[in-house]
Image 1 (cartoon, rainbow, N blue to C red):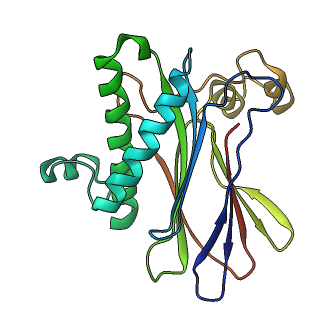
Image 2 (cartoon, rainbow, N blue to C red):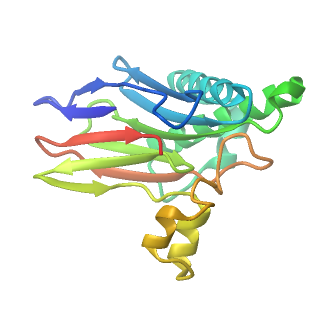
Length: 213
């Protein structure tokens, strides 16, 4: 999915998905909500199409919760509050956590869905502001193309990335490591995932890409 700024800081969005040449199932889901200017890509995990179920449940709930302005009952709002983030970013994080809870609830109600989960990367344009808020869980990514330079805006929640960061694995070795697809954070796990947030300004001509691995 690419996001392009116009002169009024509105967003033009396009999306596409394909199963590719290696996998039998396409468990990716993307959402382009131009009205509310929220854009998501989720990459599901789990056998027998459960990954597709997880990514669809999560994205539907994230968008619903974001539109509603709060993900659950009012008393749960302070639980996920991060004073280092804007109120707007906290709202998005709360919506993502709500998506996680929906996935875990579906698993508890359906044994066939046990073990499913999903990554997610979200971009939101706060109404009337000249910035974007990116949130992600897992190894789905956000990139920015600005003045001909491509920048990765997210940091993978993956085993190989953590090994590279710790100095135990080289970037070259990580690309072909047998555990390169193992994520350390996902929606659907036994505990609430860590949601990483980036709030960044928009400049004229910026292009943004949200993608699965």
